[in-house]
Length: 194
Image (cartoon, helix red, strand yellow):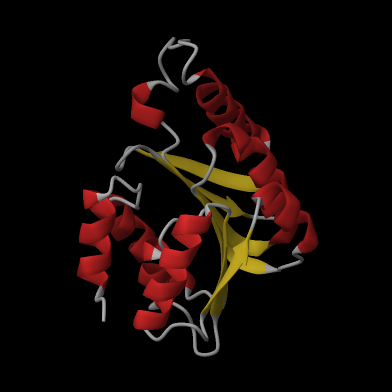
């Protein structure tokens, strides 16, 4: 029987990217105010953040989360089961780009923490399903500081380009009120105001 600290420890030992403590604290404050009924998470990994977010849900609330890595899906299913959260957390297995168009929402919050190069596409889907007053949160948006520097190395170029476009799209969208927080590896919090 895993507890949440064991899940976190194992993920860290296996270098599976999970939400950082200070980021989690920040998102927790937002969720406390938001009191969400439902959350969409793009990027489940081993289910750690979904499990953490679930305590902020209203009664009867749920989290839809998407993951394509089969090993991680197996582990996430087990972790969610161990925490008795099968009723609250539902994993969609497969590529977010294929799954998102089939979802309808509306969601109170969309948490984006998956392929960095795809953030602009995830944003378009999130906006479609987010209720007015709802919040989009993007994690790791500064990407080790590369996004705001003149970094252009080949290896990370797609991720950096995608994140820059994502930040620009948020900034230019007049239906959104957006703040960039220098927490963890950069956290963007965007509220749909109309």
